[in-house]
Image 1 (tube, helix red, strand yellow):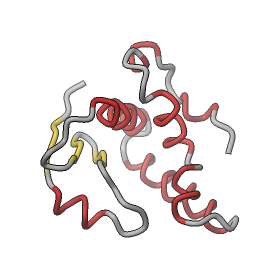
Image 2 (cartoon, rainbow, N blue to C red; image 1 turned 180 degrees about the vertical axis):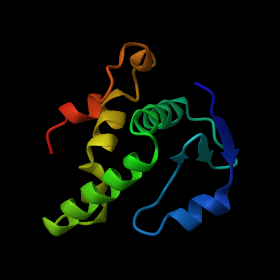
Image 3 (tube, rainbow, N blue to C red; image 1 turned 60 degrees about the vertical axis):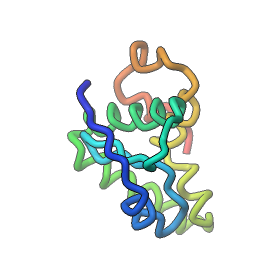
Length: 114
């Protein structure tokens, strides 16, 4: 899959409204800090690219926000709400497996219990 890495400390700071953002995927871009070299984080963000692609991008963002809102309504703080989004749970669970994207089944995030 083709993606473009953009290095921008300023953009990441702007995106850090609720929690500190160290990288973010906005299909087909992965935005990282200027001094970025973390292959685990890159793999995490590449998992998000696949999630976004399979949900036709816009539905990923709609679901992402709805999961976060649901978690907040249930009394979770910002970080807990973020960590309990199935998309994040899948990405964190598999970020150290550099073969994961080759073996990943579509909609794998749906198997995450939330």
